[in-house]
Length: 164
Image (cartoon, rainbow, N blue to C red; front, side, top):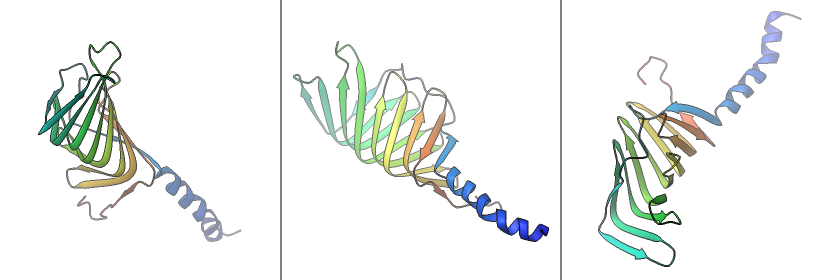
């Protein structure tokens, strides 16, 4: 069998491997590692506290700051841990924007588990890093080590001349 024919027959297998790897991509996120033990500052237009279920709902221009990490959304629901001595998690919805250092990510929703320092963003995720942009269905950010994993239909545009 000629080398050209072998190459042509194996080309679809190479392409298949490229497509499959595009379903799951690891990237760096943020210039510095974040510290989920730092205090969380929340500002919003409105606050509704529910004593029965141990939650607080912030609405209208919500901004959450923890160290260098900044998250903004139309609505953020804060769920306290059972002892009500701290925050268990936060659920952000509506034009969610997460900024950490020079990196920014947009999504329809973000769920932040404070103890683990993990933020899961879903719904039309767009990550921008300088001039580079990636999109996916879901992005899991690990604030403690400055990494993120993009899952689902991952897409980016690479410029052959190096102007990414």
